[in-house]
Image (cartoon, rainbow, N blue to C red; front, side, top):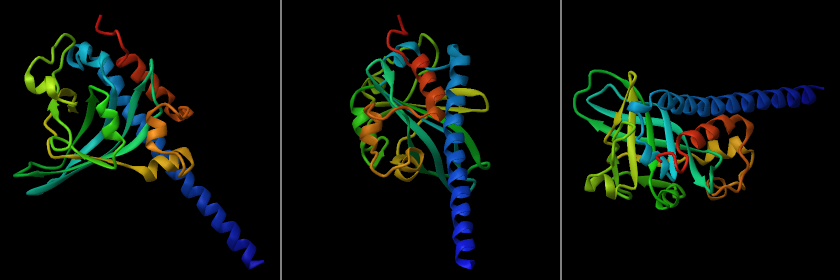
Length: 228
């Protein structure tokens, strides 16, 4: 009898843990969705239309945190999706990490958006880890509906990087930071270890209901032909 009760308690505990994990991942996608909605609400200060129209991959890291020490750490959990034909793939989970040096007034939190501008951005997100400004070229992105990515640095960038803090959306320098695959959370969200980043980002996995609103917003904000 005791063994039966112990087994039942363990089963309940596992169910509660799984439910909490599901809620955490769903909330992360919802937070990323909210960041994109805020960009849509302020188009004159958001991603330029020509950049949005040619985006290949999007990474959204809500609540990216900077430490409050002399040598501070930077860390954030986010999601990524890539264009697949006329629509966008189901999301995968990623981490953004880095280090900041120098005096800081205190801990800061901002929303980060990375926009991949060509097919290589998909290839880079299929790697376990990539260093921004090292493995791939990045640049702080321009803002405003009609802004143009005209400089050589912007034209050569594989990813453009943006930050939203205290309501202000602007380009941000993320050179030196690293994007990591979060395979553990991705596997937990899709319920199986046999589902790879390659399958998901190439459109081989249906978008789960909890992520459909995020993907629909990507379709709206980053659709081809939007700049015309």
